[in-house]
Each structure stands twice: as C-alpha cells, then as structure tokens.
Length: 438
Image (cartoon, rainbow, N blue to C red):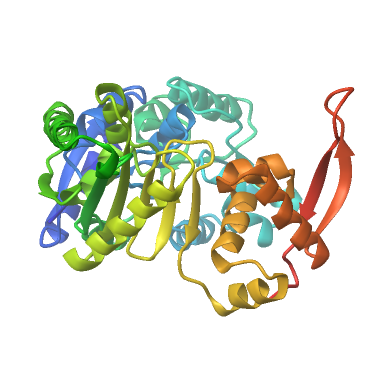
C-alpha cells in the first residue's frame, strides 16, 4: 500500500478531515501539520524514509523548492483547480453584481505566473491585484497579511481572496472582507487518486530486479600466480560484505567463475548510486582494494534479462579506457560511467531515423547516439575533437576521424579555429547539425 505524507498548515487540517477515509483502500495518509514554513524542512527529512511520496501546500512546495532546488523523492502539491476558482468568482459576482474585479486582492502563489487564466477573460484595467513578493520566506505570512491590511485600509480593495489559512484569524480581527479558498474534498480526493496511481507505477518500477556484475580489472590469470588470483577474489568478496554492512544496503552476493554477482532491487540500486549519478560501491572498492574492478548493473523485471543487462554493462566498463560503473536499464538505456564528467545516457536500441542517419554518414548507430547524447548533455552542438574524445572515451585521433567524416557528409562544419597558445596548431570548432537528416 502507498504511504503518502501530507504536509499542511495546522489551520487547514479540518479541510482534509474526510479525505483519509475516502482513499484508505489504496493509500495510508500520514498528516504532517506545521505552524511555520521552516518546520517543513525537518518534517520532510524526518519522514522521507517512511513514505512513498509527499503532497505539500503550494506555499510549502515553493519554500522547499527555493531551499533545495529539487526533491529527493516524488513530491506534489495540491491546489485549487481553475474550475473551482472560477466557480467561486461566479458565486461572488452573483452575490455582488457591482463588484469591481480590479478591487480584489489575490494572494495565491500560482497566480504570479499564469494569473490563473484571468488575462484571457479580463481586460488589463479589470485585472485583480496579485501577490507581489518574489521569494517565499518564513516571514511570508506577515508580509502577505500586511499587504491585505494595507490595501484594505488605503481603500484600494473591497475583497481579499486568500489561500493562507494561517492569516484568516488576523484578517477577521482587522475586519478585512475576505474569502478563504481551499480545494474541495472531492477535488483533493481526485488529486490524491492521481498521485497514488503515479506512485504505484514508480513503486512497481523500483521493485524491479537489479543485478550487479563485478570483475577484477586484469583477469588474465595466465600471467598471475593462481594463489594471487584467489587472494584477490577473497579480498573482493570480503570488501563487498563490508560495504553492504557499512552502507546498510542489503544484497545477495554470489560468486561465479572470475566474477561476483550482486542481487538487489532497483530501489536499492538507486540508493547506492545516488539515483544513478554516482557509484558508492566503486568509490569504496577503489579505496580498500589494491587492484581495480569493473562494475556493471542491469535492471529488468526478470532475473535472466537483468543478468544479461548487467553483463552488457560490465563489458562496457571493461572496454572503456578507464574503469567505471555502467548501468543498462529495462528500456535498454545505457548510463555511464557513473560519477564521471563524461557520463552519458543513451539508448542501446535504435529507431529507423537513427538507422537512416547512420547509413547516410557511415558512422555506427551506437557512436551516433553517443554523439547525440554529448550534444544533449553539453547543451551545445559546437565541439572540438578533444571534447568529443573526452565524452566518447576515445582517442583524439579517433574523434578527429569522426568529425572529419561528419564534415564530409555535410552534418558538421568548421565554425572557426581557436588558438589557445602562441605555438602549436589551432583547435577546430565543429558545429554538428543532425536536423533534417533521417
């Protein structure tokens, strides 16, 4: 069952009173109320290991986004739908036909970007006043409350619409005409059901099998004493056990001829690779072992395919110019080497468009997709041979041959030559353009 952490202002708890019972068959709701925004940081960090995802108020969502930039686990926000907003405006209009919309103040955070679609139905002069702060801080309640009060006392508004339950009592005390807007229980249930469905798919994907295939960097036993080879195997096995205990990441270790196999789940793999960005295991083994290793991870729903993907990923590590960790996913996406500046993400499989371009430029589909991945990663289609060599893990000579071939086929052109030193050859800057091909 999905566990959903719901972070909500203390004063809004009553608005969600009936929601947990309505979704209890598919989800366990964990209510996490807060008084001040700074409390949401600890609430999130203390509960992220115990829930599958969070739902935050718009204010808390924007506050934590500004603090962290991104969230470590799936995080959503529930909000008043456009339909509910316009229904409320219609009710207000019908009860007060002389109401001037330009004399309404709206403090919704979401209104700052799209104005809730009001610009499409109202003239500029009829637009309501919108919240003016640019950054969400812990003092946001006081700042917004002061705007409500000041606008009312200066006679600039006739009505306030607020989404901040924490300031409602103060608006009443200062006799500011207002309406507190919160998503209806039906709307919240509908939003939660959609979130639960998405989290269920994520959870299913994370339950996939992940297999690690680990080999010693130089497995040429013909040049080694057999006792030395066995000692390396024992040392590697011991280090894998110690890493599992130290990191508290459970996996089954199986020894086969010349390699070790780690059996775990995709969820655990993401933990020990920081969401497929850095391999903690490779870093650890690099510190404790006097020899290098190659690591490949494979992911799939079946043991057979996960193992096959792991062996393919390990082969990528073996054939690269330096040891690294590679991952092959169930969708044939290749990621690696993890944690390195030249880490790329590209598909092992190809579509017809890639095949046509490959035939036209006479470059393998794999190399072609790597070049496209470099362009996507660097967000630039202008590269030198040295830059391409670094990202493709090939020699500069090989990169020059690739760029010359692309130039011959009309896919690349030399923009200019960059002279970095007084002596030596200037570097050519190539602009690669695949648009129109395939």
